[in-house]
Length: 313
Ligand code: 3HC
Image (cartoon, rainbow, N blue to C red; front, side, top):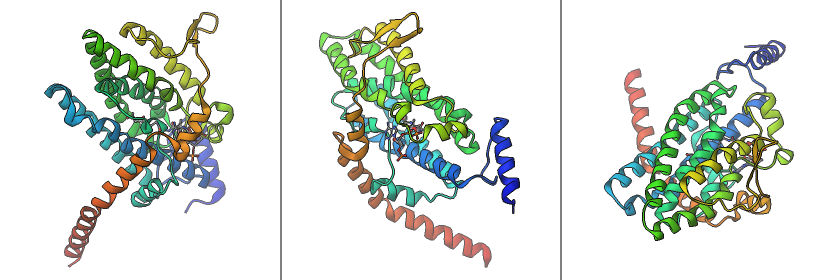
């Protein structure tokens, strides 16, 4: 058993040397707590994130689009499972985390509370939402907690497929009819600002950022990653032939970044506290799936118990 002084020193040296904290290492309670909070929020986001696009699988316009969308939604399920497993290495219980989500005691990404009104939304989610996820998650591949960083490496490889398929879908629609081009622009208008909110509140209003950066959980601030996403997306929008719904969006040669307009933080606060367009439906769907899956979990647990008893006999 590591004594406190040795534990604190070893932990501090590990962070200082930019090395990985592993499950069996001593860690401050606060580190464990915020890692479980962030990993759970991320895992919940992946699982809830299956809903907006999942509803379009049966309505995809071709077998090819259906197969791509199926693969993407399955990937999101896998991302959730890796992340719940990473949370379990910190002593969290997957069932308890699911209850916290359903009871509103843990969050999931605000972005998934918006409706997907046409198939163009599937493309825009791939391009903007998965694009924002890549901006936010690539630095997390260097997060100080080993199991989380390693899960991110695999997740980021799959996110880049998600982003590319979305952008390719939109390129195809933009070469189509006027109606298809209008569908794409309408989806961009609806998803642009909520995508900027994915990076979290402004740094000045982020209660977790300073400590998370000191512990090298987060490698960049919310605002820095948001700016990186805007700088990446603006030229992509131009190449696609769509207009991002921000009249203030403009390249600033002095800053060497795009300037952009004010984000509606009141909307953000409303959505993350449960008042978004589809929060209730998303949680009700998750609760139904959890209730309907209870028998599978009970059967698997009974089978595992029998296996253990058999092995002991
Ligand atoms: N939606 C919901 N809650 C949000 C949020 C958002 N967009 N942004 C911030 N919050 C919450 C935080 O969770 C925190 O609440 P809590 O203390 O109850 O958990 C509070 O708002 C204050 O925010 P902070 O900036 O202080 O919190 P963090 O330091 O945790 O930063 C974060 C927020 C940048 C989202 C960070 O948690 C993070 O990087 N998480 C991991 C990555 C992630 O979750 N990405 C988005 C969803 S996954 C996804 O996109 C799936 C893909 O397949 C599309």
